Amino acid sequence: MNESERQLVDLYLDDELPVAESAALLERLAQDPQAVAYLAERSLLFTDLRRSAKRRNLQQWAVASSVTPMEHRGTAKPGASRWLSWRPLAAAAAGIVLGMFCTSVVWAYSMNPRKVTLLHEGFEHSPLIVHQAFPTAFSQWSVDTGDLVGPEQGASPKEGGRMLRLEPKADDKFTRAHYIVNLRQIPAFSRSGAHTVQFQVSACPRRQDRPLCAPSRYLLTGLGSNRTGMDEDWLGGGAGSRPLVCGPRRWGLERDRGLDHHDAFHQGASGSEPHGVVFMGGVDGGEA
Amino acid sequence: VQDDSEIDARERLARLWLAAEPTVNAYVFAAVRGLHDAEDVVQQVALTAARRYDEYDASRPFVAWALWLAKSRIADHYRKQGRERVVFSAAMLDQLAEALSHPEPERSARQEALERCIEKLPEKSRQLLERRYEDDSTMEDVAAAVNSTVASVRVMLFRIRNLLAECIESELAKETL
Image 1 (cartoon, chains in turn yellow, cyan):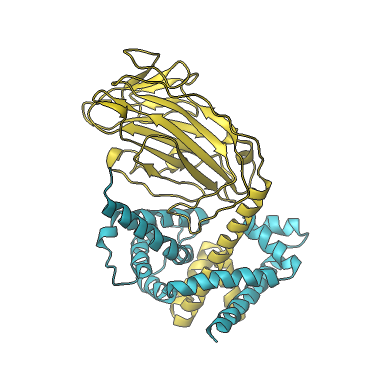
Image 2: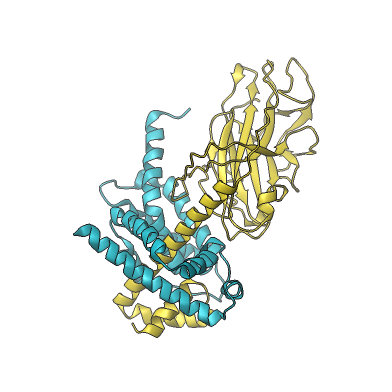
């Protein structure tokens, strides 16, 4: 390979080469195994540079993150069997960044971070759409079958005045609730660059036949600029879906437990479009 | 409730994927145009690896299996694209996978060597890399930020990457002595 072709490889990997020229370059590379090896080496270097940049960016972000104590709200109250109550979905920026399955590096900073609550989402002021697989807007709950109710039949909300009652579905035993958090409400996410946000989901689903919190599942999945950018396979998957997707535009995680889990999401530096995080929760079993 | 064997399998998969993911990234980013499209394909590979993990033969390198899965996901991506596309032949995808199937310890050493090499760069070069990769800026943005032309920035980045590639090789050679 000559110098000019090597420069073209860089332009190609930088996505700066027009389609026609890219195709012509690849045709030439295909004739020469050493050229393919060079493309592989160069692609590794580009990948490593991006990884290195992300790590440096996160370190800078961690050092610069703001620090104020996180509010603790609500206390558990005893509830009766049949009704499901979700404590609010709280989103908080944190100084600890945890790598997940799909990330390539696990980051951890021992800088004594404190949390600041930036969002505190719950049922108190949010509208509910019933019989919808998905909310039609930010800050809106959707549920397959159910209703927002106050204390009833011996069950009361963990905090606030309203709780979500899920009811069994005829065709699917996994009843789901969705909520989209608007990351643009978080000041750091309204700016360009890389950011990390940590979500805390607290829920105690109760079933008629179980006095304690029932097994439940929730997903937190990053959302791109519009809903059509998401994978459809997990949306319809219910209990069987195990999405493990992540990256600057989408992330996913599944938990089979109900109480107080924290997940950190990293927004890549390339993310200039609006972002949201989808929360999906539900309860396994016939009756909730 | 998950049993221990399922948890063990998930942990093994997570460890294997963490080690293989940079190589899969490099493979997909070489074969798929557009950062976001490439990221989507990598996510699909991760999904496929998770779903089909029970098919993985542990006596063979995981990275080779992951690249084999990636080849199929890349082919899926090509099929979804319109006419304006750049497509690797199956033979070239195989060649690329072969070239990328480094032993995993070497991949880790490369990343560490890169960090050392970046530290050795002149400040101006580091800043240029920072603007290009940390901020993920376009060439036009980088050129405007450093008060230069796009063509100059391209050449400068090409030279910086060459320096880094040479430095990495030199660092790795030192380790094998």
